Length: 115
Length: 112
Image (cartoon, rainbow over all chains, first blue to last red; front, side):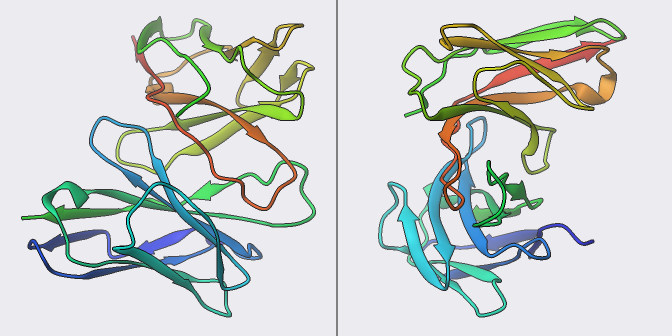
């Protein structure tokens, strides 16, 4: 059973550019959450998608947007990149029903460097 | 902001028990205590969770005080592979993927 997968593994962009990161959830999971982790910090919640809609959002600007597809996979888009967007972007998947604790399974992350 | 307080770092000798404390004095009655860990350059990994009773699984034990204001994660026989950042998180369970609010966690260093 494949876990959460993310692509690409690493990415280098320049300021002002746009980037799209991709996530495939663990088999059977229908909810995808995205987190940003700056160096030396804990992950920060960006937003969560369920039933192809954004359900929760953290304190991130509108430059950060996302999408969830019918197969539950998800994309994270960041426009007008800033140097401060350099971070590890983590995707986590979970199941919306059945479990009492909705454990989130994390992917390995995409390392984004903005120059 | 994170609702938990953890020491920034701890050391442990290989083969000994590692006891990682966490304070969550403002925890609500419907919030669970979760522990995740993050090994360098990997995504966080779920370890264990609990509401008010002590819990044990194949990875660790979780001891929650009676007033639920603090807890301790116990790795009974730490190995070098347990070197990681450990995050204590309080969260309402039973909701579709409620966001995890991470603090800075505790960096556990296990040495031989």
